[in-house]
Length: 254
Image (cartoon, rainbow, N blue to C red):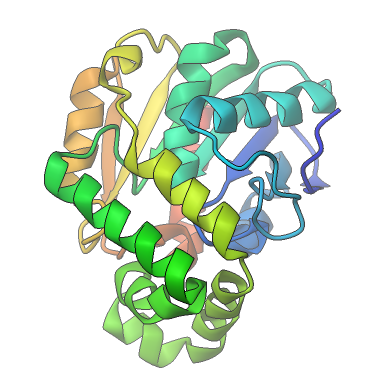
């Protein structure tokens, strides 16, 4: 049984949503609402995020993939369509390679499979800041990466709610998650992914630029690539459009 906080709604084929670093399952509110008439939508909080307990002082992306596998196994609904954004998209990649029998398809949004040395140094700097000053110290920068300026101006309440969730995340598990994300190298295991795969890029995403999505498409056999005119949290900025991309993709394969 999974130890993680899980919410389920809707009916139909099972579709699991995996959120970004520093968020919780509420990140998916708009997408879940748009998909619940066609799918059994399952959302969960990553370890140390939202209402899920911190599990272990240090972990890597394989551990997050195993967490996701536990959520899927607890559902008891066979292989699922798994949708992940940013850290959730990294989880999707590791899950599909590590537990192929549990996934019918994966969608990887606003994510990466590898970081170069400069980017890894940036992750280490963020970890040091959070450990010294807490998560609130990096909140301003996160909002600038997560959302376009016009979304921040026009959807201030939604932005404030997500910022509050970020700042409520404890420093230790957040830093551990940063280390897991910053240390990824999924390039070789991606070549073993056998399920249908959709990659969603954000044309205005500065955190994981479209070139990183193009890299994943090249690594994963048969992967499709689409784009939304959004920043890093595309599923928050454009939930209806995001849900439609996922629904159209899944309709091709079920």
